[in-house]
Image (cartoon, rainbow, N blue to C red; front, side, top):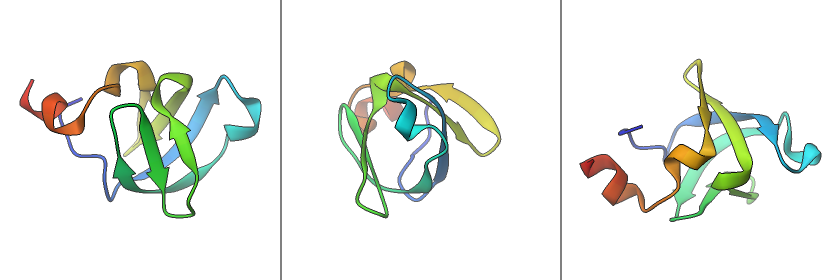
Length: 72
């Protein structure tokens, strides 16, 4: 996953925390281990699977600093 997530609309399709399943929002910030959505919710990348632009992505593959991930 080499693209920027900030500004993208995501949906949580699987999560360790069942309460997170179905959450949708726009990513407004990304750190090494977290995604922050426009409603203020913070999601731990490693614990979620998201759908973005029709693609399902396991959060384990996006753990790390965004600037380093884009360079890979």
